[in-house]
Image (cartoon, rainbow, N blue to C red):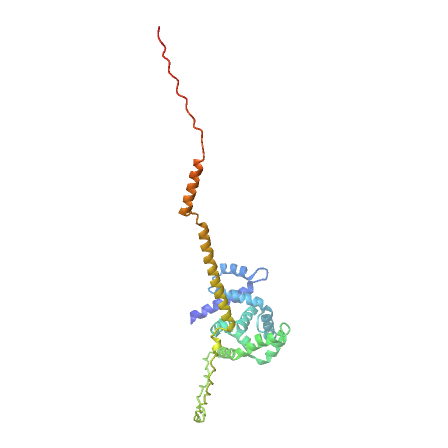
Length: 295
């Protein structure tokens, strides 16, 4: 437990310290980058979230802390205001996420008297109206009711329990927690259920027989039959004309002559050749050869 308390104390110290050292001249990321180089911080992402959110909600956090200082400012040093800013931010914006264990660790790492006064301020219902009045100067009524007053009202019993622990710790005695009463189970006063009456089944009506379709539905009509006959007649006429055309073309294409015609043509040619008289050319006899006598 001591080791965990040391971790909470170190983490809370860095949360307050970055608020003490930060100024608006540089961005949060650049500032923390340099801060982490000089300081060893285990949970850097949490420190970054605290710094960014406290800067974003600075007006709201400062308003609540200023009200606390106006009421209890005599005994509280002004230099410690960032301690209460971090606690205000954790309670209003982060308690659902971080849980009560971290809040208790932060509270126990600070001087008990300081935190005791701040918790008394938050749980005192007389100061809620003052907080509401001052916050309405910055935000609309819906935001104040949902994000501030409802959260304080929700965690007031928890803060009172922590405040009771601080009182006992400051007085040096162990706090006695009142355990809540266990829920007593009461039997239900149920009346006996009535027997379920099975309803009579309804008579299923009989369906009327469908009339069969007329025979003409599946038979060809008179017009279709006449068209079919005309189509068949045209088809037969077409086949007849085609066959006739083919037979005529074959007859005309046949060029061979009959034997009788060929005999007649041969006789005519022979008679014509007999009537032709050609002069017979007689050849001259070859000259006699002369023999030269040698003298």
